[in-house]
Length: 107
Image (cartoon, rainbow, N blue to C red; front, side):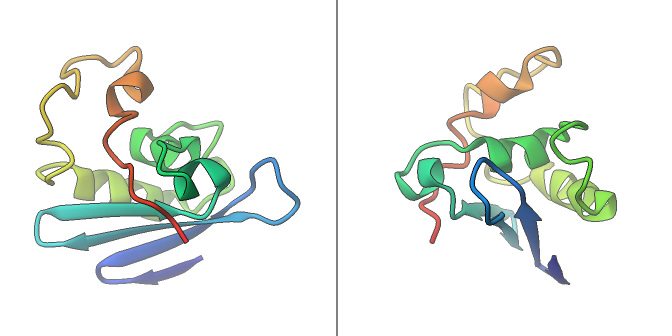
């Protein structure tokens, strides 16, 4: 995993033998999430980015928790957080609420 002031890169083990590269970057209030898994490269929401954004404990257990928390901090006040329909107050099912937010083709 690599880190700099405005970018965090995670290596996330998925269903393939090689881990996926998940990158979050922040520029002002713009938050961008990229993943090189099949779903993300096809322009769909991917669980790897969503797990980090929602802080899914099981899915992020092997990741650097300080950087997971940093990405979650970036979410607050970002353009992604302000997207209408985010299902504010939905703490029981945050993933469906966030599923359409970080759809950026990975590569």
